[in-house]
Length: 80
Image (cartoon, rainbow, N blue to C red; front, side):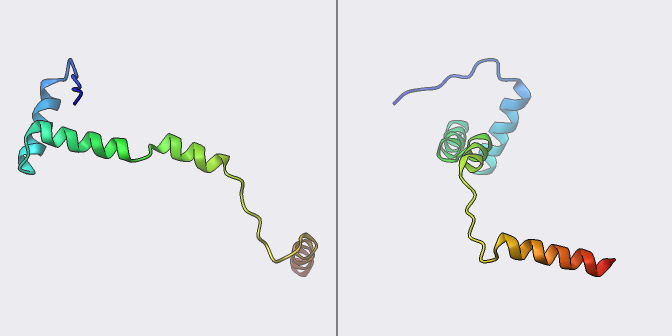
């Protein structure tokens, strides 16, 4: 199985992650592996947003454009 090495991790960061791992009863390696697996199995926000923006918006409106215009005009005229 491959390994990942991260260099130049600040002491404060390492200590915080180790404390979180200890709080869960895990080694630092187990804790970080769990976080990496979660990250890898979850779509990131930018990718999700890109996918949502590329999907066509379904238009399933039972009201015709003419009826919408009629309603708007009626509403506007009734306010005058």
